[in-house]
Image (cartoon, rainbow, N blue to C red; front, side):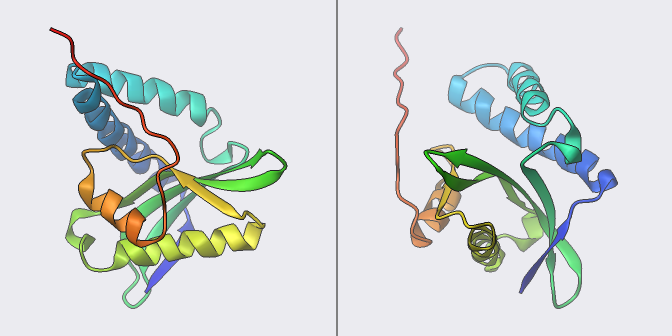
Length: 157
């Protein structure tokens, strides 16, 4: 069973590095650019989205723990926005540590997000997932998420 706790300042610094590295790596793969450029972009985007760190308005950071043994298994970053007169929860980052993947924690974490959406009165949850992340896409589909838009590109040589 997953238990969420507000992220500490120390953990936020760790999370920031992990988030920027993971997003930068994915970005460089999708955009077919050097890893350094992908990570530079991720650092810039993170700074824009979270200018006040943990205190950024409408951004919520959590540590995910296995409630049975209190071991940290991952991280969660949610944003809450008002869109068209209703609240929407955005999953900005969901990350499980490698040893805890494929053991049901992802599904439990998604259920925690649904509970949080209900708690704040948000009838909708949105997320972005890179197309090459098949494991995550499969999880999200199994949880009832559907594609709302699709970005495509073609390399011209």
